[in-house]
Image (cartoon, rainbow, N blue to C red; front, side):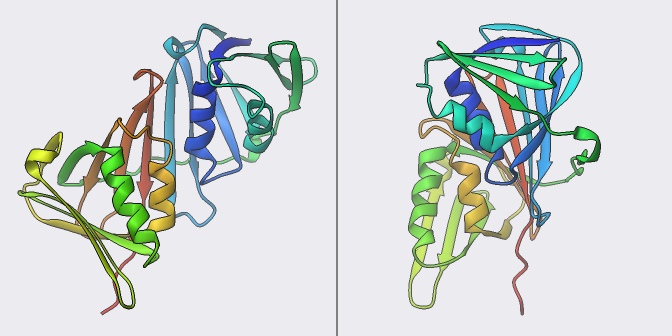
Length: 245
């Protein structure tokens, strides 16, 4: 059994977190909420999302897996405003997800989850941690996209820095410690990342919300944020680009 009602905005956040990396997800449904993990086809990035049953207006569920086509789900949600209540129900007989928005009903076929992977979250020892507002980060990313396809992120005891260099231009965003919500940098760390991937990970975060970044030297980055009034949590992992000598 899976029967739930939730604001459209919350479901849109779920789709926005996953769709930059994958078109399909294996949704793990449990009595206390839903979750999924997915890795992009290039194995560069991973998303790990958890949404508590508290984020729903109504929620009743047994433990099960549902294979969801995100394009289909997004197609119906485009017809809903943020505060519309979306009803979700699993129809066992037809193996479809029944979605209701007001008087509109759509039944979408589900994907067989048998061949869908169960990626494991690697155990990363990333020494530096920084918490900052997403709008600060977005500003630096947007400026960098115009000149380069990659950015360097640096953390030291004095602050956080985003740096991009093109053929002729340079972008630099430096946030000193007093402008950060939290900084823990026992050592100086620097890693290089794809702007396209990094930008897509920041996009789902509201501008006034905080983002937590864990960073090492030429290591993957771990980026985390909450949504749905802190009843939802997203973790991204992104592999670094290694600079050639």
